[in-house]
Image (cartoon, rainbow, N blue to C red; front, side):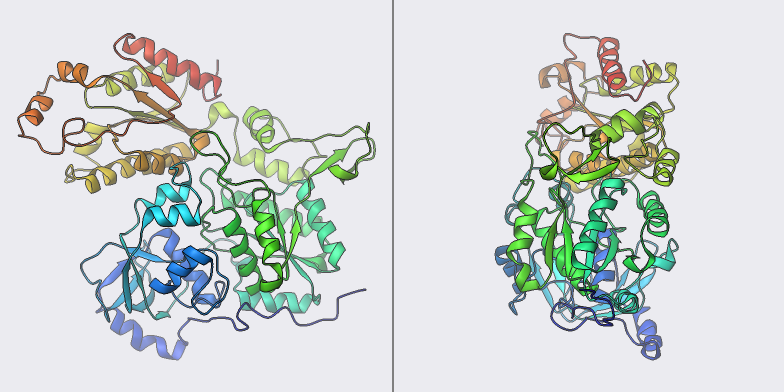
Length: 573
């Protein structure tokens, strides 16, 4: 049966697409009023959420969630009207200022672009631990969203949204489509069955094979729908990924069997619940099938090295609610290459004794990209291999962040300075970000409250992440007393490029070394909130490197770090 000839796609979730965009003829008056309103700067995540809300990607949701919707979604995965909705979409802010009921606020992005006007109709508290435990199934700070939530505002606000403009995008404009535009394109192609493929990684031959088989099985069209908002920290950047998708879609798929469109979603890395949200979003974009992978939208392992979600949890949850949301789950089946037959086959269908070949994602990074080796043609298309090789230099040319944490006087700065010289001797470009120096320049004016300390550490982390992104090594030495903030920095940099060094010096030794007399002043009460005296230091639970500065000299400790960095490939041996 050929499903072509159809010019309609599945109806949106809730039967009608939400549209929050103010008509052009009404915008001038609202913009003039907005110029006189208090402004609220949105985070990158909230900007992504606002865009998806505005165009109907989260239909039937038409605003950042109010208290009752939020609580029921956290508890039951449902909105108050009964619609299944697995993840809370909220606007967290700090109390005070213009945050009061019935107040209109202008919502702006980080460049001060006016995006929308919100009328605040609800203000309510939310519980971080409750959301983490019920939604993400963990309190572990190695989950990127659990760590990130520690810097969200303490209250949520909700109310009517009048969206004046979508966030500006200057890349890949020809394939950035709203649900309405995507539906129009799909209707023009003319298949009633649409298979969506959610991806945040480059596509290789096995992905190509799976998507083509899925389309063939349902006699439909592929909606290749990569996320280009916020993905898992450390993922391949979307510029590189989209270039590979465009190369594949234009050269290796039948033109009337694929539509490439970008999704500006901010992922929560919430595993099963996120997979269910992906299915709902794809229905709003016109798809009635979704390919769900192994550990779909999963964060990987926790701080103990254990997987946060089971490998098939996401597939099982989407399958459970498939009839209700009217999106069929297509499992991503394990496949291997058969060299003697030059084709891919499902593992379950390969006869015993047949020669097979497989390259894991870890092997792609460690054995090929990190060593400057070309990926074989049977594994990936030449165009994709070339793009990845251009974007990913060998490991010894990639960036890394070496983050020293420990009490004041532990020896962080001394060891960091020695390590910096050693790295420069081995030809690496190194930037030393010392806590005291940073406070003099980058963080001048900040105090020592928990909020100011967190701000200081995140500023250092941001600078370090930019250095790493451009291939340099950032050596950072700061007390950084709070685990959540350190894990936030790990996520900014990307776990694969972050090395946490715990300089574990006993408090009494730090006090003996204190040339400035700060500990003595803290003991006398002259300095308040001093780490280790009247403010806690949360020692790392699982640092990559644990140093003893009583037994070992700074040079010995620096040499040990250098040896570990060499083994990780960031320095040539």
